Image 1 (cartoon, rainbow, N blue to C red):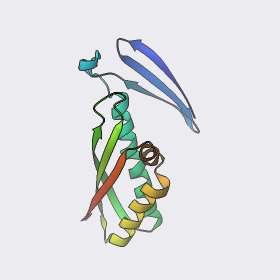
Image 2 (cartoon, rainbow, N blue to C red; image 1 turned 60 degrees about the horizontal axis):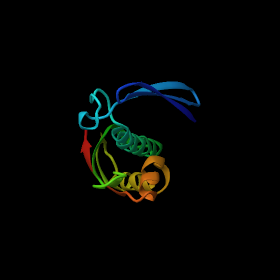
Image 3 (cartoon, helix red, strand yellow; image 1 turned 60 degrees about the vertical axis):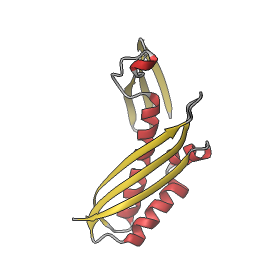
Image 4 (cartoon, rainbow, N blue to C red; image 1 turned 120 degrees about the horizontal axis):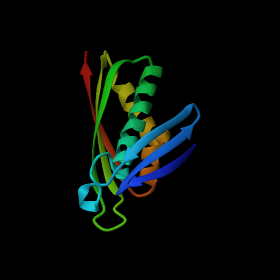
Length: 142
């Protein structure tokens, strides 16, 4: 995996990533309080979104492999950051809304446990850096 970051002026940057199947680009900016124009997500917003996306990818994959009839998954994240620099994440809570037909609570519990104990690289990396990662969920029948 590789990345290059190009300054676009002011506090805007474009990141170009390269990984197995191709290249992708992502624009990032700073909030106005830090001199940016708030025209794109900040790097910390991207990290938070990456944690939720990584966890969701793992949960949906594990449930699909467990032959659960999952139809949708939404995760809402809230976070806390340290008050002094570096203002790292100190806590992240993820609430999953998982939609499907006849979902097994046991399988959902297992999928979440495996996600946060073994598979979600982003969340595990953040936890190892000191962020308290927590989660809960609600299943919805379709």
